[in-house]
Length: 398
Image (spheres, rainbow, N blue to C red):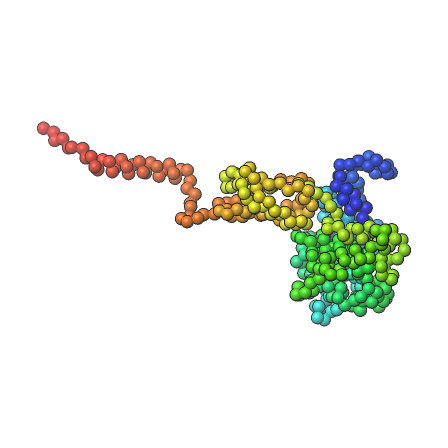
């Protein structure tokens, strides 16, 4: 959460003015890189850790992992990427091992009531499936390793969340109750920890945020945020008169966690973007030979959706664009559209080239040498025709 907060400052070049010797005087981006390096070092990346390899727990290289802890370093790593600060590639490779160990994909939704769910600890299904937070954390981890919101593992976890959402009530969730702890940990609305876990998972999916949590077949959906009596309604309806939030279900994360973080979580859940970092995105649209195309429609689809038209110089600039990956497309009548994927982690300008679309009789590109040859041929034919119309008189020698 600290790493996400540093990145959300949107001030990578700011210099720290307080802190210990290893921090004082460093830029915020340098501090972020140090934290990312520490998270990579802390990962359980030893093969001897078995099913726990690739996750995190309470202190570095703990030896075992759990998914309630593993979501937090992943959230920080996702945030750091918005500044172009990346962990070593092996962190994602190791994390994929943890994801595979922790998600229950045995059988199918008809035969396994926990299909798609992520455990608190792997291999204990259903004993340690205790809240929506674990499966939401799994979706967040899948997003970090590159899975889109149409990935089968993401959809399986989402399907379990949908079922868990409908079959339980706060403090009494028959679908997700734990034989070890009963239903005491399985909360959703009213437990700000769980609600924040769901929010950050849904709003960081790619290529676009997830608005509806759908069942396994995609035939039924829940508007988790704007739906009636869902997150937005619940937060507004349960805010204290002085503006703060605490959990409003019987047990959920009582004590310091609720009292100290409840208002922060409530506020962040209401934010449409989990970590707001913005840059400018410029798009220059040209034709086959580099001439600017004015009036071209440009769209960029990613964490947000952008639309604009190029000016006389073939340019359009979007300012204050949320960082992330965008699919950028330019199009105009009479031209074939062009698209490119852009990772926006700094101010960026790209060029898209549109090919003209043939109309009527197909046009063919003719090499210049052929044009010269055709010109000489036409000249020769013209001369021959002129001679045939004006034949020279023959002179007979005497």
